[in-house]
Image (cartoon, rainbow over all chains, first blue to last red; front, side, top):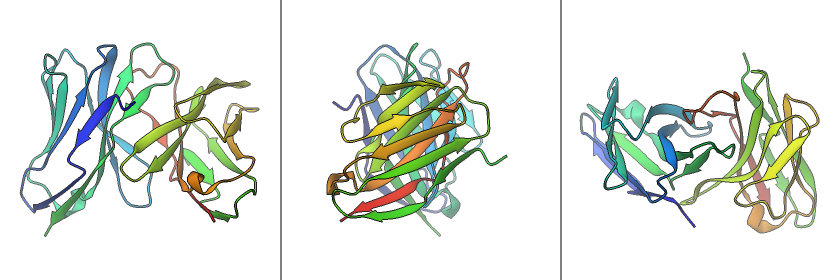
Amino acid sequence: QQQVKQSPQSLIVQKGGIPIINCAYENTAFDYFPWYQQFPGKGPALLIAIRPDVSEKKEGRFTISFNKSAKQFSLHIMDSQPGDSATYFCAAKMMGSARQLTFGSGTQLTVLP
Amino acid sequence: NAGVTQTPKFRVLKTGQSMTLLCAQDMNHEYMYWYRQDPGMGLRLIHYSVGEGTTAKGEVPDGYNVSRLKKQNFLLGLESAAPSQTSVYFCASRDRGQNTGELFFGEGSRLTVL
């Protein structure tokens, strides 16, 4: 059973656009929500993470918005660049669990020049 | 630092053959994980280890075995490969005290089972 639902599956934007990737969860025992970025032929790497008691977090051009009551969170990429073309995964970390993360299904982002 | 290193990077097997994927990390991390990545399925946890000599099942453990004889190494074995195990396999590690969801991943091992 997938506990983190991610959409869309793929996304194409023009350079300078603001792609938005959405995720939803159900389990209230999650206590951290990281986003991972994966380039072709590479492993995923942590991009940015947020706690559920914070509504927004920015790191450079990347912003996470978090809506605790709706159990939803999203990644926004400001002024997107072709170099941002990658697959993005949202994830949720279970409190106190060694298993760590449940991942969303991934979004393949293409930023056209 | 090399970080997390996976070998081999590519492998083709015939149905019924066996093989072992090796993961090595040089960050002295306690926890190590094996995931598989399939299109539209995200990353699914196969097995994990919280320390040398310990292993536990993840979300999709059937058909796989693991061993953690040394702290820096985590092996994933397929005893009798099936076409359904065609996938990209990722190893990851983290420090025991890391609680923000940051895992360090290798570059993956692409396995094709014919």
